[in-house]
Image 1 (tube, rainbow, N blue to C red):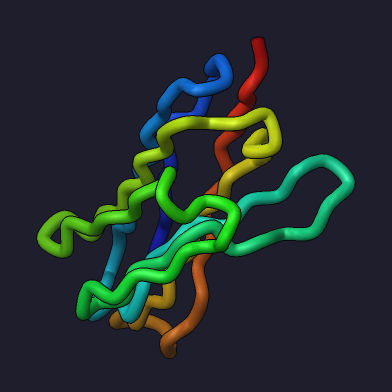
Image 2: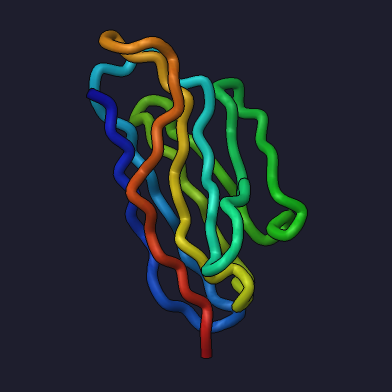
Length: 120
């Protein structure tokens, strides 16, 4: 069984920083990409950033220049460094990964979500 476990959410003032971490564990053969999505109250789930196995990154326009995604392939971990946070960044953030495991075909996996709140 594959699991994604997130950490690092919390409450921060506007202009502050947070770092989210997501670790994949289980019978993993390979990870095609890992990334982060977010869902604000009453809104749809949106892509924030993702990083492929080759290191290619993709960011939502709203976070470019403020957020940085990185990956430690040896630990199957993805990090999201969030700087210059704004109230509109408030949302539940979900880790997502496309993983091939020993016991299942390649498929998407999701973390449980972590709350990020930006408020003064």
